[in-house]
Amino acid sequence: MSEKHISEELKKIIPFHYELEMDKLEIMRVDGVPVTIKDLEDLTTILPSSYKLNLTDDKI
Image (cartoon, rainbow, N blue to C red; front, side, top):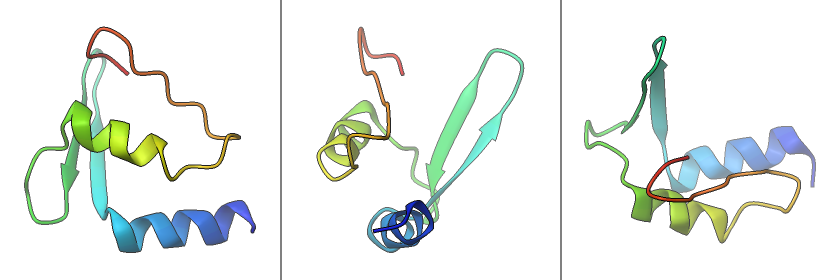
C-alpha cells in the first residue's frame, strides 16, 4: 500500500487538520473537536511502522 493511499485511508477514518505555530501544534478533527492524546494513541495502532509517532509524557 502506497503512502499516499494510506494517507487517504487515514483521512476517511480520522479526518483532521492541524495548525503549527512556533511552539504549538494544534490538531483538530474536521468536526471542530480537538484531537486528544488518546486519539493519537488509537492512530498509532493503525499506522504502518514507517510512520514514527512517539507519544511520551502526554507529548508528541
